[in-house]
Amino acid sequence: MNIGESIKRLRMKKGISEQKMSFELGHSGNYIQLISSGKMIPSLKEFFNICDFFEISPSLFFEDEIEAPELV
Image 1 (tube, rainbow, N blue to C red):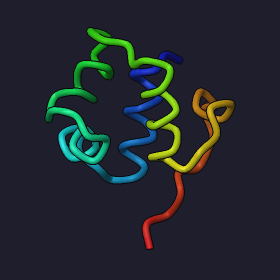
Image 2 (image 1 turned 135 degrees about the vertical axis):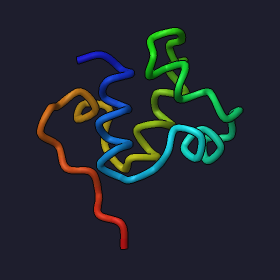
Image 3 (image 1 turned 45 degrees about the horizontal axis):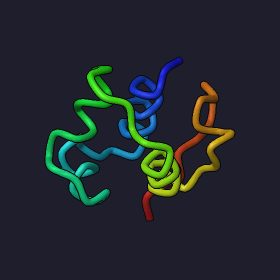
């Protein structure tokens, strides 16, 4: 599984759009779409920010069966 596929899977579990996630990470509206489509790779710092966004450790990011935290 690649970074874009992992982001898409986790984002869908969290129920958030690419645009909203991009804005919440402090980027333009198409930032996550560019990563998900494979046109861009996030920096290591941004990768850690994405893991923090999903409230998971970097080691869990690529696991197929992790559960995204439930929205309260």
